[in-house]
Image (cartoon, rainbow, N blue to C red; front, side, top):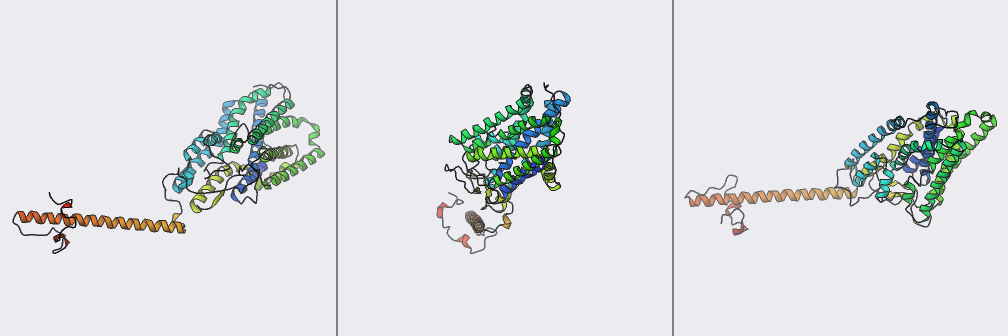
Length: 446
């Protein structure tokens, strides 16, 4: 793969990206862990991740193409697999094992979820299975993997399309092409939602939710020649971009605090706004000599940003398992709004309740620690049932013993021997009395 227009290679590490990752994962985690009154629109953090991924992957491809004259697809995909797959496999294996211990609702459609996670197609598997993200009766264990599936599909397809963009002679043409595709993706989401389509289909679809990734792609092409511009390192440029970055972060947090709906104002309105604000913040962070990038890359934020992938992977499955194990009557924050059709937002909570498709009850983790009235009634009924079964078995054993004793007595009388009760039957006991079943005794010879 060769380019017709040489340009400076992007830097190996971009300032501000770790801080942006930290902000994105904090928005999503706070949205899931705390009541919707805190960050009812915190799910826009996923779109921040999309813009970062599109920008970073395209910058990596540009740097490799400019340094070697080609892009080694095999090595690129190997690097992505080594970075993403081990942690993903550990989460799936560990959380699936814990789900079998906990039992109940977390086992619903678990096989389909694992299949989607293993094939990088969780979003399409969920759409095909009719799993309504915004109106689900039970929260899926690996539901947060839908965004990872979108990104992984991008990692597979984008390197194949990348050479077509390099055929365009100018960076601005490549940028314009990426922005046009992003606009088309956002418009397609709006068409699906406004036409009465499934909001989950619009939200999960790679085609309808690719505008964040494509904005990041266009941003990478736009900023590639930035290092050779003399005015880019001027104090005025640094101050302007830094102020724009601060305003973009303020707008992003404000957007996350606004209640969202299931109309086109949110899909794609709020999502597109979050993507644009993220793009502005990324420009401010990677700008040459920018103080904004250093400011958001402080040590705590950088620590969270370096671990944002693992935090995002683990937080949702562990939350679902903890609620199912220790608070089965509680609720899990799980959706940005409900598709009521009137554009109003609904409290994003979903009760955990048993489903008819769930397997038979498995002893739950921490059952001894729970002492709810329902659990006490269940344990009492179980004890009574076991006691009744023990008594029935004892009666059957006694009945058989008495029948065998009377059979031995009859045989002794026929042979002229003195009557002796069977060993274990007391003299004058109920074995000498007429059997209540009469001739219907199962052990009496005919």
